[in-house]
Length: 411
Image (cartoon, rainbow, N blue to C red; front, side, top):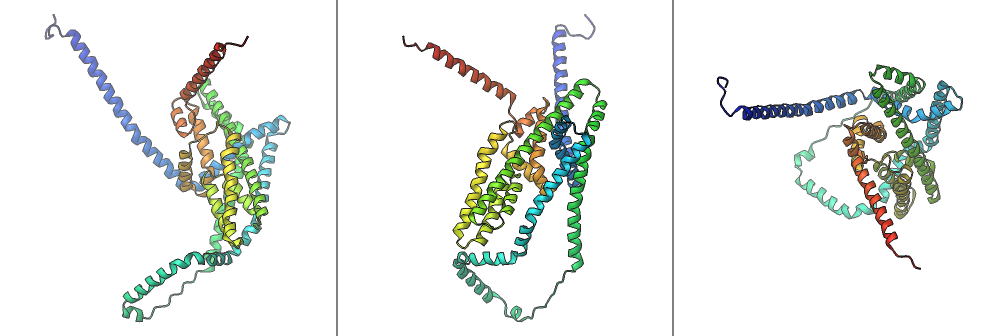
């Protein structure tokens, strides 16, 4: 027996050492996982800070990437008919710019007319709301009398100092110039980036693939890019057609109801329908105000708004689900959170790109096993749940077949 070794403790001591080592490894792993959470939170805050302060540069890049993912399948299809790569990209972007110009030219005149007549419209709304305000005027007069009695006599006798504030015209003019230049710069940068991505995107992807070390990683990246192109192109293409159809239906309905500038309301419905949930409510509020200004009885305003909401409800609950199917379903809570987050980050541009970015995130998370749970959180179907449903459906079909076989046939 070795010196210093207690008899009968060899095996028990070895087990104790193994358990102590396992506990130490568990504590170390838990500490590592505990440190990962603050690191990820800090990294997310840094990324959000960078996206917010670099929005004038990052937002056009994101929009151009979405245009690339949307138009890339069309470029490939045009190449199959013999058109060159550069020519296909140029034709698509010229068509996109042409449609944008036609849409703006269609609504700019009636929109300018409504804005120029805004003071008159506000007076009309105030006159029509007079009947609603009458019951509250007595309470308002009584409160004013109480305030007059409580006011100190010296303060009432004191002569007020006249203050006149004049805004310089150069400030307003330069503000309009700066705002217009920002919009034009955003559009130009987006279109130019989208053109170069469509024209040279394949070379950029090939250079990226050469950097990856293994063939499996290259194949995974190619599959992810193709899936993103197919998903975004399918979603934005179908949603655009659906929204244009809704705009045509709204324009026809407004014309039949006697609303002025029906093309303006149809275009508004088309654009607002790109914003899930909130777009229909905003459009209904605008339609109600416009109808209240146009029609003398207020009941016509409610009826016009009801027609608008009926059309958007039919589109949202029947047409869109039947055409898009369940392949690109998203969680409504995540859609609202995405709209709030990107709207806060990038304003109106962020609201319009919130859902496409959520689809990109869902497809990307769904492509990898480690992030598949995040895809389920965003609205994807759980593979285990799908297998369970398929198994239950198969079992139910087998039971139905057995029952039909067990029924005796009449001789």
